[in-house]
Length: 190
Image 1 (cartoon, helix red, strand yellow):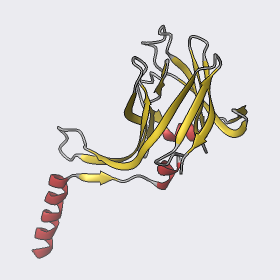
Image 2 (tube, rainbow, N blue to C red; image 1 turned 120 degrees about the vertical axis):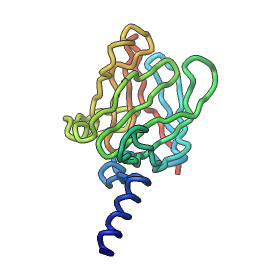
Image 3 (cartoon, rainbow, N blue to C red; image 1 turned 45 degrees about the horizontal axis):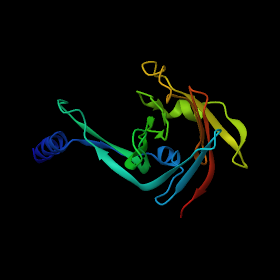
Image 4 (cartoon, helix red, strand yellow; image 1 turned 90 degrees about the vertical axis):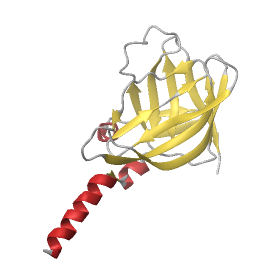
């Protein structure tokens, strides 16, 4: 009888408190950034833009509000100060969010926005074919090209069509619909 009561209490506690999904090491490893990192990009027309990594944290996200058994999900969130594409100022926003199955890229910079509209499957990204490119004087041998699946904003001149992600270094290049190409020129930080 005592076991039955303990089991009931355990189930009720789990239901009330909800369950949690923790990040795997594989998911955490997809992030190359640390707090204090700086990314300097230069366009093919000579413009410069800088992204400052302000924090890299594991955050618990609540489950669906109407779920009978809500499962909280732990994500890795990379926050950054980035150029506001509408004004001459920097705003702090997410740059990257990763959970155990998905990745979301929040890249908006001077003149460019990656309108993805959905998360990318982490396993599929890790299986994508890799290319070698020399960017900003450095050779990267682990680059994947990620096309924006968004069709709603394709006509905008700031639409980033292709994002180039180095598995070891992160954002290294992006190409806009208007023909501008931005490449990583320098990194700095801790």
